[in-house]
Length: 211
Image 1 (tube, rainbow, N blue to C red):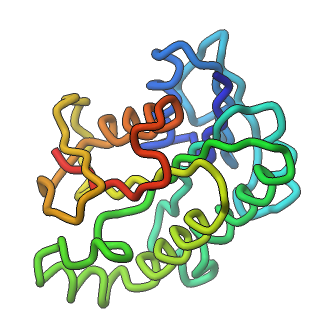
Image 2 (image 1 turned 90 degrees about the vertical axis):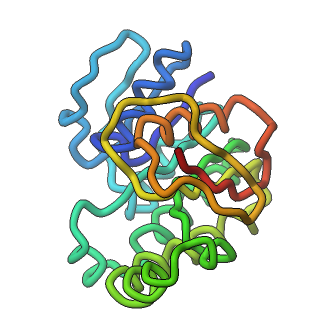
Image 3 (image 1 turned 135 degrees about the vertical axis):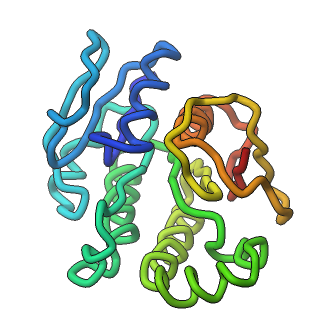
């Protein structure tokens, strides 16, 4: 499979690239600074691009079998200049996929978005989602709405608190609205996103992740 990872230079995106390559896929790593990706592989192509530029995203999508969206701001201040950080780029990706017949889409969201809000402890609902991270969570919700209305073969990943630990491979993944462990490694989330492009197990579902 030929997979395009949008937001691939670091964090979960970089780990998704690594996971996809280890599972035998060809990967295009799309980012503003893809040279930051410390991976070299014969099946890896690094592509300079802007997640928020429609033409840039449109040029990247053709020829791929699946798209994984992990793009995220490195600083909270980015949402002051671009409050629709997630949804704007995701809309560009959806439009390009629809135009080019690329069907499979896996998107990194967050636990607490949409109907998963009540799965968070009360203090997180009030302080994080309702105050400190209000803008990013509101945009994650818009992002999910766009994905779910896209007509594509989508999967939304909603991980709990992210850590930089190694992949454990024993995380909880459920489309049911029930509590999951409070933390999960980015490596495990990355693996889930890649598996979501391979399998129909989670097709058109928002999946709560923890572990």
